[in-house]
Length: 392
Ligand SMILES: Cc1cc2nc3c(=O)[nH]c(=O)nc-3n(C[C@H](O)[C@H](O)[C@H](O)COP(=O)(O)OP(=O)(O)OC[C@H]3O[C@@H](n4cnc5c(N)ncnc54)[C@H](O)[C@@H]3O)c2cc1C
Image 1 (cartoon, rainbow, N blue to C red):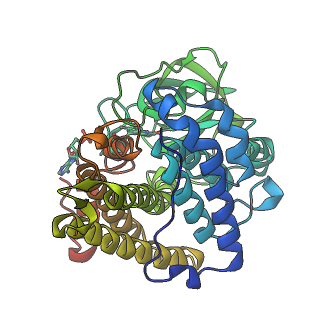
Image 2 (cartoon, rainbow, N blue to C red):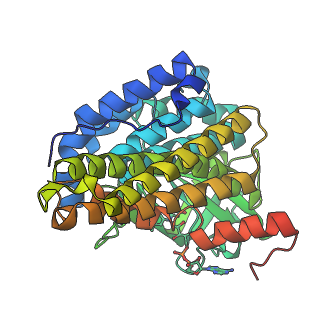
């Protein structure tokens, strides 16, 4: 793979709107990605393996629980810093960002927000250092966009719960130490349970043959009469709103992360277009390639402003689920379109692993589907502005 010469576009001087802390956090993540991710990621994506050796580094740049308070081992940063870290990691690879998103927003967040004090003390510090890795089980084989229909369930057996069912498409599942599992009780109410690797009847087979997020490990969660201690139930919140609250946090991070992938594709295409000579001049001097590059930068700039404003709203606890949906949908779609255009700027070279673009493009096909599909986020906006949900 080519050396990482990435330079981040900032056409509207958005850096001027960031604090010194934001820039420090962002720059630390940026140099870590250049040093630790760029040199190895193509190889791991090609062999479809998660590079486990990066876990310590992810923890050190604050990627595990950036906004979780320091008393629980988190970095105690604000939401904009969280977003910037996700942007930088996804600039390297969406699969690595997925691992960090799951750990932070889908595992640490529910334990922090819905867990007991004992659960917080037991799990959060270890999750923050990467000593424990976690996964989040919501999606089932027959319930993806409609998780409320889930059939995974648990029964009260007096001194423990008995868990049965299956989850699929679960990021980090094959190596996770713990799983936050969403399941229905006997009354049909959804609760979160902390299931630990090693509990009898719990297995996590890996999902193979993915053409997307190849450097992220994906698997199933299978529960065959798993006895879960009662102390592992998250007591603070139940109902579908509990997992959806976690998804709000993760989707917000994705809205930033997608900008990273788009910036990398744009930057690669710009550099290539300036160097590639056809018909005796750089292709960057042709109107058609300039149109592509100018439109990419315009879309990146709009996405940056949207993410930053959403971050300000998140910091004030004012961001709505519908606003987060709009930003996730817009920014991922923007990144995928830019990846496709940037790939064309590179001609045949664009399809090789010499450059990051094709990997980003394939990754983004998952990102546009997980954490709520492109369609579902549109329906969330539609329901919000009309008051008429069109899901059914
Ligand atoms: C690589 C990867 C990692 C993932 N990681 C996780 C994870 O860690 N944890 C987890 O719980 N899940 C995870 N997922 C699952 C992901 O969230 C689901 O794939 C997603 O929610 C869509 O569900 P589905 O695949 O069952 O598609 P479906 O829900 O079957 O949707 C199929 C199509 O129908 C459309 N559709 C559905 N309902 C409607 C409607 N009412 N109106 C119009 N169109 C509709 C959808 O937009 C989509 O285009 C992951 C998925 C992938 C691919």
